[in-house]
Every structure is written in C-alpha cells, then in structure tokens.
Length: 134
Image (cartoon, rainbow, N blue to C red; front, side, top):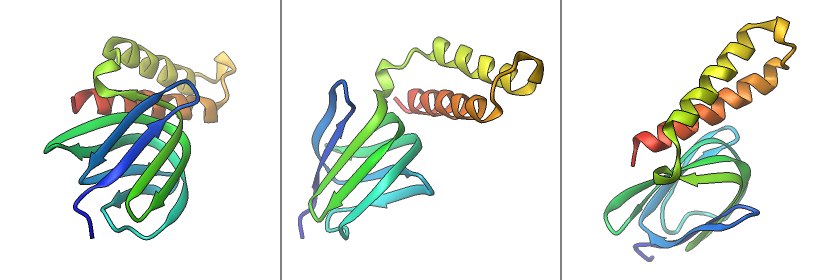
C-alpha cells in the first residue's frame, strides 16, 4: 500500500488542488469523512465545510460548498460547486455575509427563506473556519 494518494479538487470554474497527500478530511453530506491511502472505493455527496489535507507535512484547508466526491484506492477526486483556498478567503467579507445571514434568518419580516439563510450561514462559517486554519 502506498503512503500517499492523489488528490484533485476542482470547481466548474477552475482546478484548485492536484497534489500527492498523506490524508484528508472531507465534509460529506452526512458528516466529515477521513480518507487515507488504500481507502475503499466510494462515491458520495459533499456538504458544506472545510476540506483539510496534509501535503509535504503541512496541513492545508479549503472551504467546500457541496458537490461530489469519488474515492479510489489511490486517488480522490472532489468536484465542488464552490471551493476556496484558505489564503484566498476575504475574512471581512465572510464575516459580513455571516452577519447578514444571521440577521435575515432572525427577521421573518425581511421575507428571506429560513432554509436559504441557514445555508448562507453555513457557507460563511465554513469560509471563516478555513481562513482561520491558514
């Protein structure tokens, strides 16, 4: 069994990661999944959260917002609807988005769908968490 696996992370707009990694954690639809080299094959849906991986002994983070995951014995492909590297995240903008989503979710008079407000909060929180790990 190999010590690393190939990780690819892409969105419809761009490719973000193409590295050999020792392990990773992925936000699945039903919770986080840890993946090591030699993992059983898997197809799954992504949730909203922070994808973390170890590359050359350093932990890296990305904010991931839904999509799909394919795991093979020595390869992981993440096709995310939206993904950002931790160092690309504008923390002030993410904080403002979180505050706006919280305000909209708490004020029914604004006419914002509560489900949409919760998703916006989750996305902003994932972005802030990823940015905090850079």
